[in-house]
Image 1 (tube, rainbow, N blue to C red):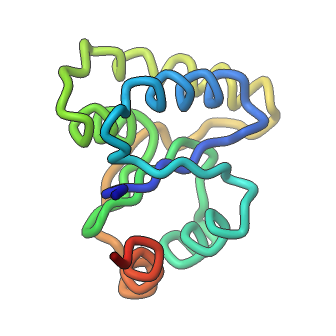
Image 2: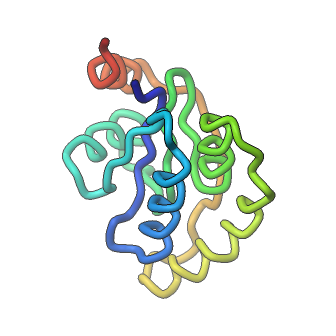
Length: 128
């Protein structure tokens, strides 16, 4: 059963490639993947960030939401495999992708506690 949700931009070639790479490593199905343009993602992002939503990868876990490089590290942590420092490439690639898509400078990484509204949605998604 998934323990975290990775939200990624299905229209971004880098994001799709990263999600495919992580899916291939996720043999125990610890992560649930959803596109940023889905209803499920929209509800989670609105509950957590409201109007301050970010153009980045987002990893929703029970008590935290990680963005960007921190989300990449969180995926490796959930899969219990060494990150091989691949997360270090994220800031440069994210900036390039963000600028080329016309989004300007993204907030590259960060982790914060989940809001009460986010926790309620996660409980519905992860209920046994």
